[in-house]
Image (cartoon, rainbow, N blue to C red):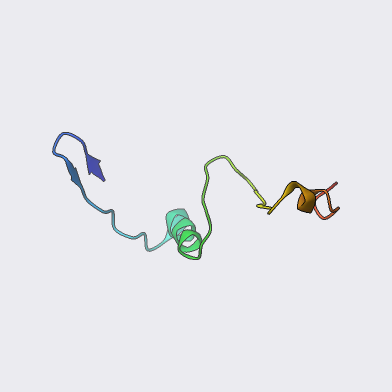
Amino acid sequence: MADIDAGTITPLQTPVSGALKEADDLRAGGAVIVKNVNLAVGVSSTKAVAGGFLEG
C-alpha cells in the first residue's frame, strides 16, 4: 500500500485464500498477470508464428 502524502510504502499481507491467492501462486511460479488478457503466447520470432503451430 502506497501512501503518497506520507511517502511510505507498506506491503500487503500475502492472501491465504480466494482468487488473490490463486493469482499470487501463479505469479510466484513465474506467470505474468495482465488485466483483461485471457491468453497470451510469447514467441521468439515472427518465423516461429508462421511455422504453423499458432496458425488457425
